[in-house]
Structure formats: C-alpha cells, structure tokens
Amino acid sequence: MMGEIFALRRLRWKLTLSYTLVAAVTLLALELILAGALVAFLNSDLLPRLVVQNFRDEVAPRLERPLNQNPPNAEGIREELVGFADNSGVRGGDRPPPPPTSLGNYTADQGALLVVDDRRRLLASVPEMQGFPEGKRFDAGSISGLEPLVNAAFDGEENSGQLSSNVGGQVVTVTPIEGKKGRVAGVLVGTLGLPNLTAPLLITVGISAIFLTIPAAFLGALFGFFTAWSLTRRIGRLARAARSWSRGDFSVTTKDRSRDELGQLSRELNSMAAELENLLQARGELATLEARNRFARDLHDSVKQQVFATSLQIAAARALIEKDTDSAESHLSQADELVRQAQKELNGLIQEMRPAALEGKGLATALREYVVRWSEGAEIRADFRVQGERRVPLEVEQALFRIAQ
Image (cartoon, rainbow, N blue to C red; front, top):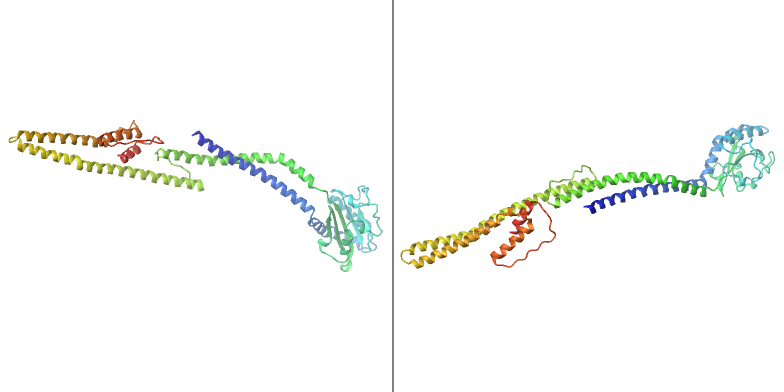
C-alpha cells in the first residue's frame, strides 16, 4: 500500500519537475532568441534601410525648400537638422561637438547629419565638426563606405539597399533631396556608430536567468504540482478500484466523467469489472449445477444400485426364511452390508453438499480437509499445496470449492 502511494507521489513529482524545467528552459530560450534577433537586426542591412526610408519620408521633404533657394539657405537647413536631431536623439547643434575629427569614434548615443549639395559642398552639419568645414567641398572618402553611396544618390539611385551600409557597427545612409525638375539637388548623409551589444546582452540574459527564471520556475512548479496532483488522484482511484476487484468486490467503480484518455480507461475498466463479475457469477451457477448433476449421478451410480441390491437381498431372505434359515441369514447380512455402504456414500455426498463449512475456515483449509477425506475414502494418495493465498468473498470460495469437488 505504502509502495503504491509512494509510486504515485513519485510520478507527481516527476511531472512537477518536468513543468518546472519546461518553464525555465522556455524562458531562457526566449531570452536568447530575442537577444540573438536584436544582435542580428543591428548587424543586418535592414536597420540602415529603415533609416533611409525614415529620412526620405520625414527629413528630405523639409530640406527641399531651403536647399533649392539661390543660394541655398544654410541656416534654414541647419534649423531643420537640429530640430530633427533633437527629436531623434542625434547630437544637436546646441551641444558641444565631440573632439574627434572622424565620425568613426561615435558611440550609440552619438551621430551626425550632413547636407551636401549637387556641387559636393557641405552646407550644414549637426554637430559642427573639425575636418568637415561647412561651405567647402565635402570629402566623402574620409568616412568608410560613404563615397560610393553619395555617387549612387547623385546618379539617381532610389533603392534604399544601395544607399546604405552597415559595416563594423558603423551605419552610413545617404538620402537624395529632390530639386527642381526632378533632379537631385543634394543629399542627406547620416551616420551612427552602433555599440557591440553581444556582451551586454549576454550579461542581461545571465541576470534575467536569476531574477526571472527562478520566479518562472516557481510558477511552473506550482502549476505542474496541481496538474500532476489531479492526474495522480485519478490514477489513485483506478488503483483502489483494481485492488477491490482483485479481492472479488466488484461493487466499487471508478467515477471519472472526463473525456480524456484516463476517463476512457476508467469507463473501460468499469465495463471489464462488470463483465468479470457476471462471468464469475455464471461460473458459480455452473459449478452449482454441475455439483447437483454429479450428486444425482452419484446417487444413481452408487446409492440407488445399493438400495436396489439391498431390496433383492431382503426379498431373497424373505423367500428363504421358512425353508433355509442359514441362507436367509446370509442374505440379510449382505443386505446389512449394502445398507452400511449406502449410508457411507450418502454421508460423503452430504458432506460435499455442505460448503457452508467454509465460513470461518477459509478455502485453503476446507480444501485441505476435503482432500484428506477424499483420499481416505477413495484410498488414493493425494497431495494438496497452496501458493499465493489471499482472502476472497465467501461466494467466490464456495464456487471454487464446488469446482474442486
């Protein structure tokens, strides 16, 4: 009993542990997937394309008017760049410029916006930087990968994939600014240095593994425990019913109305138990009927013939009692012997028809006594052995006793 309960508990804890591991591993996997997706996004060409599209929709139309003035309105261009830079997080014109003369040293919160006209002159930049004087020819070759993009933009290229690059964490974009009669009046150059987020993301995942995975594992364990408790409780009902059926008590049924596999198994077992009960009842009735038929045959084969022989001996003795007393006495002695044999046979048959003696003794003891009596009466040696003895209802013992007889 305790072993079976322990087995159920062990199954319950196995299911609980599986839910816990699934919850923790799933959360860690999602974190790693999101971190990997973010790193892949920052290192892909998708980010520069989105930046070019945003510049084309939001900034370039606002720069067309000051750029197409004659001469171009550099201050108006600067105001538009500063307004956009302040709203987008790019270093604005009201902030001090960084000390480096190259844009390659920018970090994640730094960037630059530059407007170059069709004469390749730098009209305005946010922030203002040494090495890139405004009003002078813009040296696109000083920024890695920029010159081919600028040339493509002035040649009329509109594909955002051909106007942007992301090399070594340095995002460079070029957006054409439309002029009169559909010509390219200038370009908007944007640069942004992206940090290496692999190490910070791994640290973040490690920290979240402590502060998020543990609560997730606890919730998974809690949910798994109650789910497993429901399953093991239903399995326990099946086990208790099976134990009752093994003792011959078929009045116990498993009540599980669910439509899942366990509910179906419960209904199948109930049906099997009912059929088994009917089978045992039918076998008991057949055993009783067979015992009655055997009793009738025994009466016919032994007692009836002995009684008939006794009547013949008595008739012979009656016919000879006046003529030959000795012969009549012999016939009466034989008749007396036949009566004793018939009495012995009747006692044996009556003893066999009294299985009520099983109650209080048990089937094994009653069968052992019956085998001893039968062996003595039939003068045939018989051995009786019992293995795996257990208690069963009296009705079952009587049926088995009838079968043994």
